[in-house]
Image (cartoon, rainbow, N blue to C red; front, side):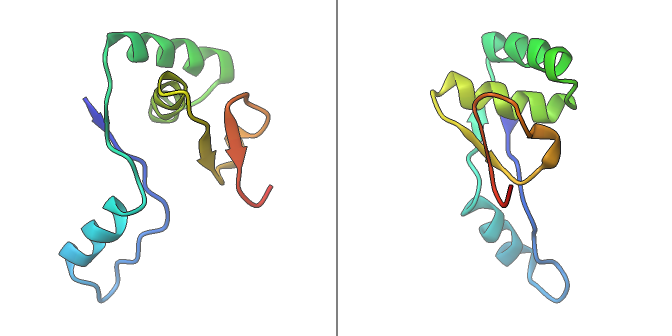
Length: 85
């Protein structure tokens, strides 16, 4: 299952292809396998996250990377780098 996470996307008065290019230039799209899905389920329960957020975090961990976000509900979770904290 491909997963993408997007931030602020300009939309008013912009061509849909421009918006898609904007999003693709700022996210990573990765395949989610069974092991990542299982880790995401554990992360969801452990940190009380929405499943999409848990998948993003589990995918980052699987790749040995930190999740960089400005979403406050990730604050204090290991493996997360907060923007504007």
